[in-house]
Length: 112
Length: 112
Image (tube, rainbow over all chains, first blue to last red; front, side, top):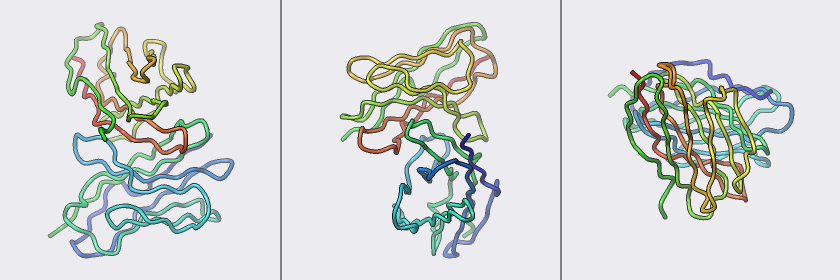
């Protein structure tokens, strides 16, 4: 069964600093991988996705993620964090059946 | 283009009551999925519907049911509400051309 682990419950970074959020997945085949962002009380917004091909994918808002099959990881990165990036970030794995499995989320706090 | 819409925004119910949540997908999307997000956790998959047929079901009791209409909108019904059903209920739609899902703002259900 597919599953997702986000090891970091909460991360605090200073504005302008770089960011990396970790995600590990368990899946029998090549997975569909996603990162979503959720502001308080809101729905989820798709940041980026990986299906196949180039393992470094670019997303919206300056985010990127790298798929590493050998490590079963799909970590999210941003070179310079802005105060507006403070939110909850979810990694998810999907399949052809379209049922997605989400991690527990990482809450990002940005210090001024 | 309008995104996924959900109604109502907020709802307060009493234990034992029944509730119906509604979702309209993005125009052209034929698949709708429902998720439950308890505070502090990632979304949990409840149902997926495609072309009015149930395509997937998560690990939820039979008190939860759903249906999809000819215009691809969907309803989620929950009977005999329990305090533990209090959560944000998210609807997501996807197109026939990709597994990524686009989420609505959610319905916040509080059971007292």
